[in-house]
Amino acid sequence: MRVLVVEDDDRVARGLVTALRHAGYEVHRVSTVEDAVRAAPVDVVLLDLGLPDGDGFDVLRRLRREPGTAVIAVTARGEERERVLGLRAGADDYVVKPFGTAELLARIEAVLRRTRTARAEASAPVLRVGGLTLDAGTRSAELDGEPISLTRKEFDLLALLASRPGEVVSRDLIVDQVWHTSWEAPSRTLDTHVAALRQKLGEQRVRIETVRGVGYRLVG
Amino acid sequence: MRVLVVEDDDRVARGLVTALRHAGYEVHRVSTVEDAVRAAPVDVVLLDLGLPDGDGFDVLRRLRREPGTAVIAVTARGEERERVLGLRAGADDYVVKPFGTAELLARIEAVLRRTRTARAEASAPVLRVGGLTLDAGTRSAELDGEPISLTRKEFDLLALLASRPGEVVSRDLIVDQVWHTSWEAPSRTLDTHVAALRQKLGEQRVRIETVRGVGYRLVG
DNA sequence: CCGCGCTATTACCGGATTGTGACGACACAC
DNA sequence: GTGTGTCGTCACAATCCGGTAATAGCGCGG
Image (tube, rainbow over all chains, first blue to last red; front, top):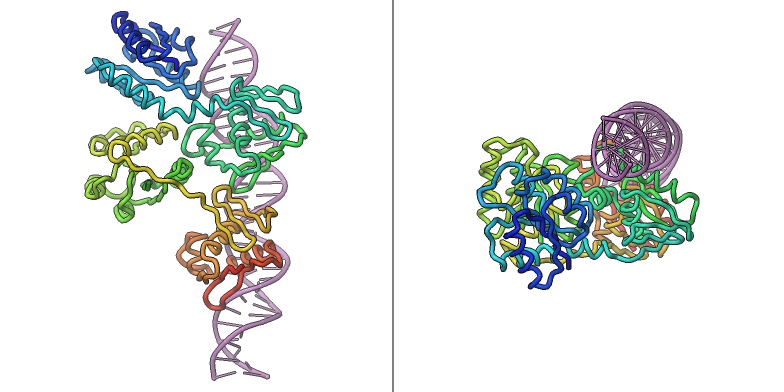
């Protein structure tokens, strides 16, 4: 289990690293948000919101792109500006300096427990439907042995459908799982991506059927 | 574990309900604070603070009367008036629209952990009558193993009848449950849909009987 | 800063689904 | 058998929904 510590104060950082290593984690430490993004992917990020560089939002967003990466925000007491509050809300959890090792470890455990499902899915090996093969690990796809290139959203969407071959997946559920919003905006975004996938899948055995008024289904 | 969604925007509410159901919760949805109080007790209440009616304080107080009921406030971004801030402080937690499903679920989990430790299981909603199988989750239907395609209204109607096999379901109740209007317009709409269903069910063991002057009954 | 690929949004179209009302058939009571 | 009211059937209209393509916006790397 890999933990990334993003902290510019050397003294604090050294203490954290020692404690975490002792607890059995593989620990990396960086001082800037730039390096933080580069160090991904890891399982847990301890992100100090008081870093001098970067506005934080960007880091969070980029770290979030890797599913299964949990973020714990670290803030100093009294550092309650709007920006920090917002960032804290974007993290999976937060701790306030100064904090004890026991509390920190407990929060890491809790966060890991909560994101276990997402991480397991992220490492789910291979989905096969008809001549279609999806490798969740490398996010690559093959159709009848020929590799096809899928964009991020296309892959997520197709993987979701492929995880329930033959079953109808409702539009609401798709939007929920792929776009991570709870409701669908009044736009044709989903349809557009379905169209792109159909194009790439071509006239193969596997195809995406639409179930009017409900959602889509992958048959092969 | 029962969750009550108090939300007046239909689109938002539907998305929320879908996401929560998928996560295994028993979900109820109401649009007004009045109905919210009536729907109690539940385990968690998602309370939209932007509702047009009621002043909110009263709702919170009444919901709180039932111990063990957690309240998560839902606010729109920028809706930072004094009233809202106060209400938010009175809730166990709050989320700001638009929020991701993962975040919402995590907060619900956290709140539940704080208030209780029990958890419940969700049951697979599958209806069986004779050779007919209705899967409410995928909204798919099978007749003697053969999948049959039903439109939305057809599915809703058949599911309602199948939920009370052998029992007569009154026209009024059907109109209420399937069309969500309290009285039947003087038209042949319901009959038309029954006719379509009979056509699709064919000469099978399961059939829709009409009970003159009352309603319909599904027998198999 | 620029360009490029990916994603989101928008307007429009066509077809499927749903609603409507006229009409006839049927059941039931007398 | 007749009357009354309910239901079935049908053709058509209204509406909903998803497909498509053009366009705008965003993130990312140069």
